[in-house]
Length: 526
Image (cartoon, rainbow, N blue to C red; front, top):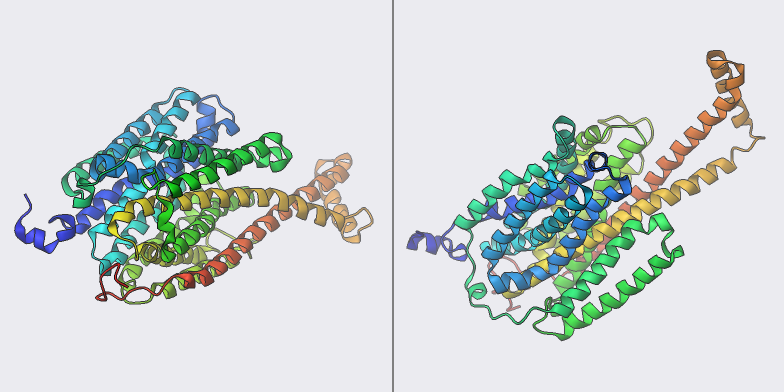
């Protein structure tokens, strides 16, 4: 039983130390974000084990993301209707049980169904955890709470591929899902003991469920994910089905926006975007989602596709980003209440942009430790972005608006990440083709350089394999080098475009209103 002294010391958490609340809600959040990245490494093994093609196995990811995105903005209604603590516990239990069935799935159909349930359970974990943390600390200490939150959001996607590769190689791909079970059980125990609903949640009067708004949300997010995943395979708008899917997406999105704006008690209340800081934060979190997910997805892919690293080794190489985030999170928690968060945001985005420019100078001669410092600094810079961004975005909102706002905030980060990965994948394919054409145009039959190199390689191969194999082998060897160089140049383009996007964000942060200094007027009175 909480004592009166504890109630007086920690009034916002009803006598519970807020750091116990932080650990309780960050366990499931870390687990959910980790699972998003950890499964991607195991896809080839899942396909082989369940007699599926690689393209079919990708639905293990897309089915989860669609269910996750649908639940994110709806989480506030469920939390207010059933109670935040009760709904959080329900989501953790569903996610944990679904993780077991993912690992035990005997067929592709079963694992897809389990992933949909897992995505539905995991979708609400991030906004619920963020809202609870923001309300568990006084305004002057919110930077510390967001620093703890950032450890789950930033570090988990970084260690996910490494951990997934190790579990898959050492045990089985099924353990990439089984690992969630003990974490989920511990989270249920801690949430039951330490998390409590605030009075306005207990006394909330919630209207009926917005079936139309939820249906429109399902349609436009589902169409978006399908188009992003499959558009490149069918040449985007060159395919009739893509045009129809985009049309359905646009109609459903407009309908959802209209419904959410015109219906006060709808599933999502979009009137929160009237707040300038929240509106600016939504723009920046979508762009940040593009930046961070591009680097998380593309950099390990570069090591595997261009340099020939294994998935586990590539995960180890990019792992220091998590170390940088781990170092930066407590520092930003300390500085967040002392320095204008806009300055910290600009510094973080600038640091990220500079690191992306360094990635844009990669070549075929780099080793595992060449990019150690910029990879580490990327994680450090992301800490200086995510924490102040979450703090600034919600600094002018009331507690009653927090759940609705964090649902939208996290949904936009996921959507930005999906769009960013799709754009980067498309750019890699098309820019590689373009660079290959440009290189080939300079290697015509009359090229002196081509003739000299071809003769030297043909002589070597002819000595080793016989005269008849020399000339064809030399041309094949040169063509392979041309392909490798064109792919390398495509990665360079993507890294540099990501840097330009981060530079733009560094300037856009000044759209935020100047934050209130701790100890100033109460929230809502400025």
